[in-house]
Length: 249
Ligand SMILES: C[S@@+](CC[C@H](N)C(=O)[O-])C[C@H]1O[C@@H](n2cnc3c(N)ncnc32)[C@H](O)[C@@H]1O
Image (cartoon, rainbow, N blue to C red; front, side):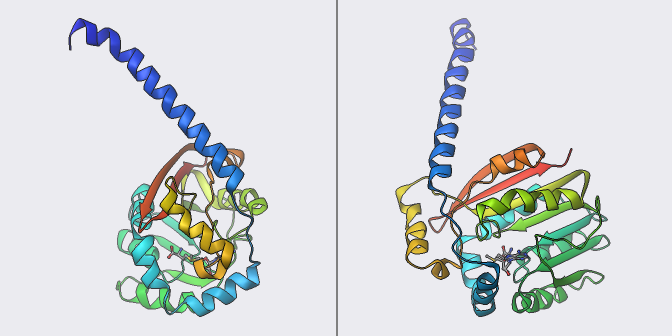
């Protein structure tokens, strides 16, 4: 590096850094302003996923598989861990958890029995035994405090009302051990005009999008008392997702 470059670099980095911070702040303000209210209650969500259970995998592969894969990487599961997946759906991630954690404790819950039926078949095919998959509600986890090393939750917060984000995150934190990791993937607000198509569909009829609208969870993780919060943005099939990881202090 020349002397001139050596002198310039910190300033350039600082400009770049400030620009990125301004952009992040701008994105955050726009997103928070635009976050749509959840239009469906818990019973309606259950009804929708009862009907969608048979076809959900097509969408799950087309638009969400990259974010789901990334959330699993960030979870950094080691064999022997105690892992909880909330809202397992048809069990894409849960089957991968079992492969990574064959001799650990793996628990999965979902609101909708019809989704769980598929998750159980997928879990069975891994050949791993000793896991639990049962009906349960993210709002009231039936586990003691400080139980899990990892809690995963994909594409559920985009279904629930914003005023429930903090209580549900607090519930996730309660069951995590100190030092335990939370990983979340959700639909978010798109960064390009073509990502907005999905918000438009949601406005016409939320059921067209399985009840999901774009959310921005990062500030809520801070409010719930998590540390080391990271956010990544992923667009697949023009469908915008955010993947967040955080640690319970
Ligand atoms: C969009 S699907 C995502 C499924 C799975 N996580 C995945 O990524 O493929 C949403 C799932 O969240 C479940 N769900 C919605 N509200 C829930 C709640 N309060 N507690 C547990 N599961 C819930 C639904 O039953 C459905 O299976």
